[in-house]
Length: 158
Image (cartoon, rainbow, N blue to C red; front, side):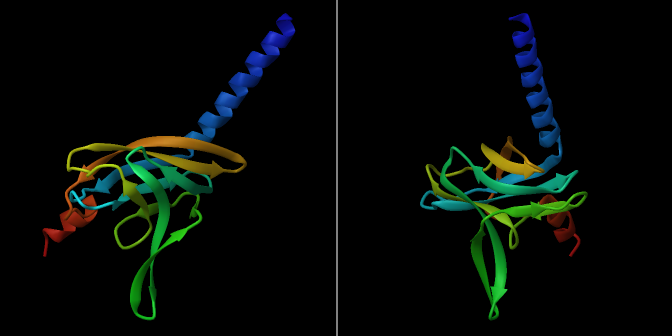
């Protein structure tokens, strides 16, 4: 009985360690969500994702939205279009930026308006190797006219 209990504890500890290692492989920085108007039912979430090892963003969810999709902006026949993609590869050692006009998370079927200063939980489902894990972040809601922090600094230099 003691051996079985010890084996179960070791197995549980190993599972937690592997999940922790996979979790540490993707770092999220500067997460934010664009504020909405009272009638608006969708908005974008943006952030930087740094993967220590090759990984894939499989999906996302948030309690403020009925649906969250990974989207990209593409130009087709001279027209910029937004479309959902099934997942987003995160190359090892490179920053993947989710930003306006590019890759982003689309929060749709919003349950309430999102106001500047609010914090929105977003759960990312990431696969690294054969391990899947969930990583929940808190994204700050920024005003409707917000740009990424780096662009705000450059914008003032014009």
